[in-house]
Length: 375
Image 1 (tube, rainbow, N blue to C red):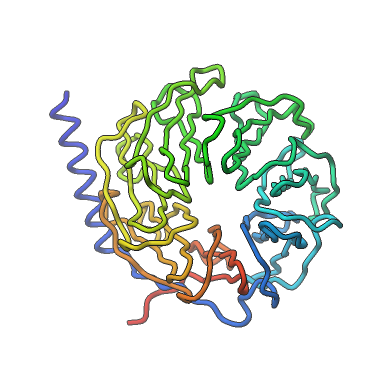
Image 2 (tube, one colour):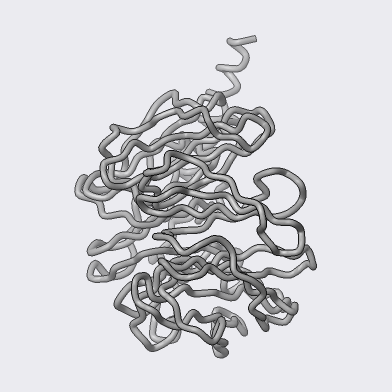
C-alpha cells in the first residue's frame, strides 16, 4: 500500500510539473484607471467580495492604522472600473481590518471592522451595498488583524481578533451578528500579527496557525474538538519576524501546508504532515525580504496554487508553483517604493484570471490586472 501511495504521489508530481511547464506565463499590470482612489491614505488592508449583489467584485478598504481615517467601500461597475464610493460609517478610526462575511445569515456580505485601540464595529449589508452600523464587539486593544470563520462549527461565522503584545480572542457569533461570548487563544503576550485557519491534522476541526513578531515563536494551535487550542506545535526558528501566514494544500497530497511571510529574511513554505506538524520546509524569495502580506491562489489556471506576496520597499511578486509546492518561478509587479501593507485577489474584470488589489500605506492603492506575458 505504501509503495502504491508513493507511486501515486510521484505521478501527481510529474503531472503537476508538466502542467507548470506548459502553463501560460503571466504579468500583472496597472495604470491610472486602475487606482483605487486618488488619495494616498494610510491603508492597512482591503478585502474583495460582491457587496451589492451585481456579480462584480467590490473592495472594502481599511484606512488609518494608528491614525484615524475614513474607511471606504468601492463598487465595481465592470470591468474593474470603480466609479462609486461609499463611506463605511460616519466616524473615522485607526483601522486595521475590514473583513467580509455573512455575519447575520441573510445571504449577503457584511463587514467587521477591526481598530487599533478603538471600538471594533459590525456593519450589516442591506443586500445592495448599503451598510448600517449594527454593534460593537470586544474591547479596544492593539488589534492588528481579524480572521473570520465558523470556529465552533455551529453554522455562524465567528471572529478571531489578534493583538500585538496582548491577548488574542475569539468572538462567537449568536447567529444575528452579535458576539456575546469570548474565548482567548494563544499565550497572553503573543505578538500575533496574522492568523490562518485550516484542519491541519485531518480530524475535522479547524486549527490555527499564528504568525508572531517581536522574536516570538510561531505556532500551530490544534483544536481539541471543543474549540480549545491548548496543544502548541512550534515552527520556524523561534526568532522569525513573521508578518503574514496562509494555509493551503500546495503539493496536492491531501494535507494542508502553510506559507510564512517574513521580515528581514526569506519567506518559507512548510509542508504539512497531516498531523499538525511539518515534513519539510523550503525558503523562497529574497534573503532580505520585507513581506507584510500574502495570498494563495491559482494565478495562471494550471490547477496549481501559487503565492502572491506584498512587500514594503521592494517590488511585490507572484511565485508560480512549479508542481511540487516547494519550487517557484518569481514574477514581480508594482513599484519598489510602495509600502504594501495588505493585498487581496479575485477576478475583478471577469476574464477568468485572478487579479490583485493592493493596500498601500502612504501611496495610492492599486489594482493589477492579470495579463498574458509579452511574447
